[in-house]
Image (cartoon, rainbow, N blue to C red; front, side):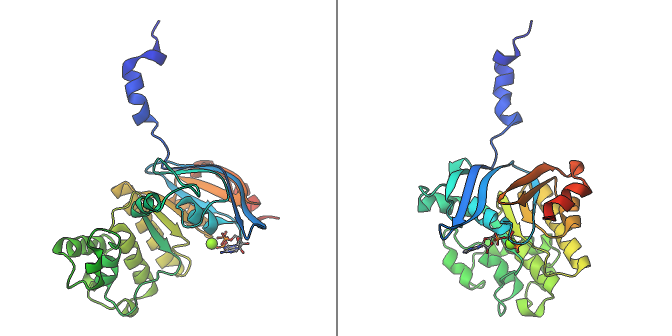
Length: 267
Ligand SMILES: Nc1ncnc2c1ncn2[C@@H]1O[C@H](COP(=O)(O)OP(=O)(O)OP(=O)(O)O)[C@@H](O)[C@H]1O
Ligand SMILES: [Mg+2]
């Protein structure tokens, strides 16, 4: 009989077939002011290449979880591993920096520098890389950076607006610039907190579709929050719902029912 368990070929393949999660949270607890427990024992794995939507009622802790997962907020208990490194309170500054360099962020409010051009704003996304002070003025930025930023703008179909000031762009266009700014660093992981919330339904759908397509084609792992259940169902592979400080359900989109969604927000 074949001894599969000890087969060297199968064992050599095993790590590839089932790589370690990019993010691994076990029993994660987050309290504010030592009184308010917002997250109360979260178990969550995010695997490379997945697109995961995080849903839940207002105040259920979605933004807190995103910030905790990437070390922007220190966790209060449990264990957290990100890109293979533990991210507890014991994590050093270098470790946090290493993690943030591999992560892109997009928020509901895109936080562009209004008076700067779209190109300049995207080049700002390269801050943190060696020599990044040059990114203050795109005229001083190395040609390679300008090319990368122009490519990122082309990816979001806005290269023709590169020299327009950010405040001269529509809300949807500004959000696309914010996506380009997050992608220009070629992150492994993209975190987006309600990226389409301030947009009209059509722009919101377009931005979500763009996100999802870019992440799929560039192999970027995507974790985003949304209050729009269509955005969650249409652009993710998996949905994680929070309720009462815990994971209420965590399953592939194809297995999520309308009753699951309703129960997430009831009570
Ligand atoms: N910096 C903070 N200090 C104290 N409490 C906070 C802080 N940030 C969030 N909270 C509290 O944590 C809880 C969860 O907030 P959080 O912003 O994570 O929820 P959310 O699910 O993202 O909500 P929303 O859908 O409204 O964005 C809320 O009760 C909030 O008041
Ligand atoms: Mg939030």
